[in-house]
Image 1 (cartoon, helix red, strand yellow):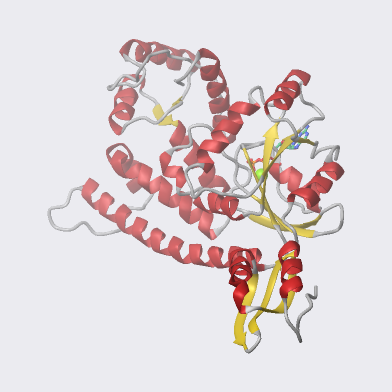
Image 2: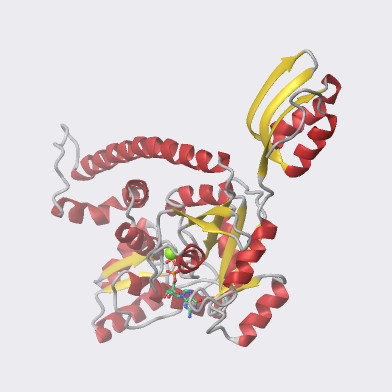
Length: 411
Ligand SMILES: Nc1nc2c(ncn2[C@@H]2O[C@H](COP(=O)(O)OP(=O)(O)OP(=O)(O)O)[C@@H](O)[C@H]2O)c(=O)[nH]1
Ligand SMILES: [Mg+2]
């Protein structure tokens, strides 16, 4: 394994890489940190370190070396030639975990596409194993080499997947538009992988989602309904967890999650209080979220696993993120208080109105367009008749100026 950043960061990143490797089903025998200002163009770790690694591989009997970064196709081949075992990088590892965990059609297609994008430039190393898997079914065109045939096949599979994803994307977009148009506010859970998002959703709604002490247990956004302390219904969406150094090929695979995040009325950012560096995790979450359309929903930080958290870590979080909700999805501690916080944090419910606004109050009609839903507008003799659902303050303002006979606001 090789990693970047400061010594402490390197150590944590390496620990995380080990957890990723274990999630993918490997047994980790040894970890090695190499400190360089820039990766070696030929072997990534440098030739001296590569020889050292070869000795470790021989001594431990390892069959795979995992690098904590993204290797160029050339570096991968060079390292394999020196080490004589399979070499993979962080990107490949995460893609592999995603491939095993994806359940929905969309999730599977996204991961397959990301894998192909990653594979395409690395075909020389991968070509053989591809055809061994019996995937080489397309006939080779005249004068085409094996690699050209493989590339052509992968490109056409990629365009097929992209088409399929565009269709699925429309379905999802209309589903989340439906959710937005309903009166129920939407809450989105986001956070680092393994922070306890699914556990929290189960605790808040009584749903029985998969919870696992593994990275990326959840890949597909899942929606459930819950009730706040005062009894208001809301929808709540569980999302895929984020991770540090999110590889480029995966950003697309995260797209549906990132869009769910952008669509929420309230974002609950879940922090794992048992992590040695929850603020660093938050930074990675922010970086991943920055890769999509900006969300403007209010945020509430939820510090989870307080039942087993280290007091120093909790104190640090309290300093850096004052006002965060502290909970344990496991014991239920802090959950009632969180449900009460949701009452305050969720946008006001919309109220149905049917009023006639005088012609000189076009400003009110504009506000309805800005914040209302289910809007119907018609011009009548007395002014503009507006049927819509709007926040309470706007409903009150409209009731004050509205004319007869349909004048009063009803809820
Ligand atoms: N002690 C303790 N463990 C918790 C708590 N909440 C979750 N866990 C554990 O943390 C692990 C991860 O929980 P999940 O709910 O699957 O986390 P997630 O954020 O959905 O993870 P991914 O879907 O993999 O990104 C599981 O082993 C949970 O049992 C908590 O409040 N206290
Ligand atoms: Mg989960």
